[in-house]
Length: 234
Image (cartoon, rainbow, N blue to C red; front, side):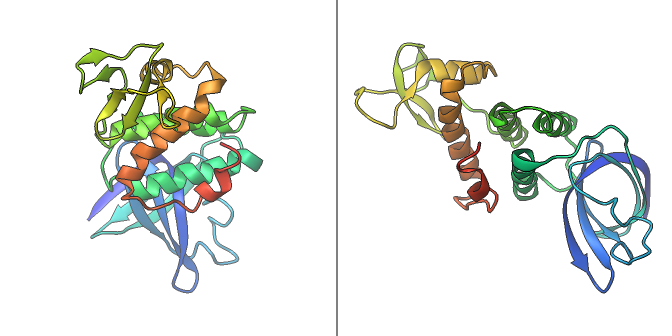
């Protein structure tokens, strides 16, 4: 049996367990994603009632024997804003991505920081698209997906800002032979995304299509439920 005390983390998902308990999936910097049984958390007099919510950083303690651990303590880290409206929908999308793609008990401090940053930005920015695109790219990196954005492997040439390309998430960009195709991607968009530069709003929709095509490969082509909420938003 292992015992862990006072580790910061976020709740990604929660589901009912037995009569009054729940199973929470948390994401921490030091331990990655893992499941914990929160005994009695749904009882009317639970010490955790109203506390075990997503999108706020909590300080967790648990004991673990086998696949699931048991929550022993949870305290709120003051300073995490609430997500509302569009920000809430975007947060649900981030959590679903993490539940489907992040590896269990695989610590990734950079991904943890990227997730926390995205939540803070979604609580305050009017346009959530930059936060989502930045996080999607960081998640792909955490999964070992190195997007080839600035080099045409087929033609062995660097991507040019003033040319158009066809993009395959497995192979990268290839110089388009025709400028009439609706599937082409501007070279400038590829170079900006490679540099994590999201300063041109006119390219954000194209960046979304490109990154989500890469994520779809990791998802095995399966759609996320939260994407339906975001199609007209971000």
